[in-house]
Each structure stands twice: as structure tokens, then as C-alpha cells.
Length: 160
View 1 (tube, rainbow, N blue to C red):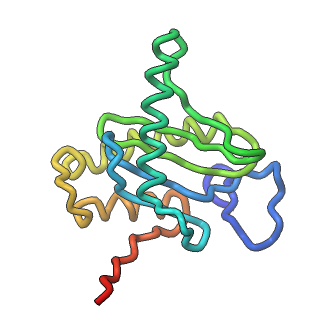
View 2: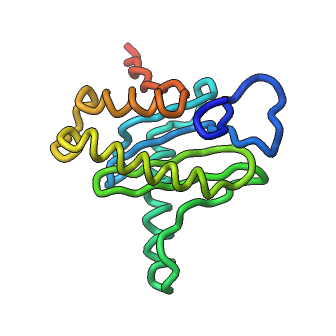
């Protein structure tokens, strides 16, 4: 069991009532990926593309619902038991994909983590120029908080 009653993904069948964090994505506010954590083995899907898609989706939903007076979207349901919870800060966006019952507690935790990330790493985030080494500490912080390993990008192999 992890922080706040969260369970790590295992090979065994997971109780559908438990919440299992499967992916954590962190992007800058423009959608540029900063970190991807995954409890699963590599996927054929590009995590950078998924993170950017979440950013576009969240921005679209927030704009649409704000226009009708509802406010920002905090989470969405995907499929039968998956959810994506969103956290928005001044410099970063945090997306957590989890399986199980919907959780307002998780949404609050994500908001708190966004504030903590922006406080701890303000200097790196404010002046970030695309150099991934400058945000390595943020990725390591997320790994400790979620107990989910980082999935660093695999260098492309150039065919000769």
C-alpha cells in the first residue's frame, strides 16, 4: 500500500474498488512533456503524444465548461474503470491515470502536488529551456511520491 491508501499495480487481479495509479504525466503548461511514470511495461503508444493530448483535452474542456459557468474540469472517466485526474498550476500540468473508483481525495492530492512541485522547483520551471536535465529533480520527486518508475524516452535508432 502506498501514500493515502493507493496500491501499486501488480500481476495479480486488482480489486476494482481499490485505486491503482497506472501512469503519471507531467507537462509544462504548453503541453511539452517533462516526465512520464508508468506502472506498466513500455507501450506502443508514445507517452509524449499522450501527455500532449491530455493537455489539449484539458485546455479544451476547461475553456468550454468555463464559458458555461461550470469551471475547470478536474477529472474524466475513460472506459469502465479508468479515470484521468488533472492538476493545473502556473508552470505545470499533472495528469494521473488510475483504475478503480473515482476519488476526490486523489484530485485534492494532485492539486497539492502541483503546488508543491511549483514551490520546490520554481527556479527550474520558470527558466526551463527544454533541457531535460534541468527537470530531473522533478521526475525523481514524482517517482518518490507515487512509487511508480520513470519511463525515460528510448533514444531513436537511426537506420543506416
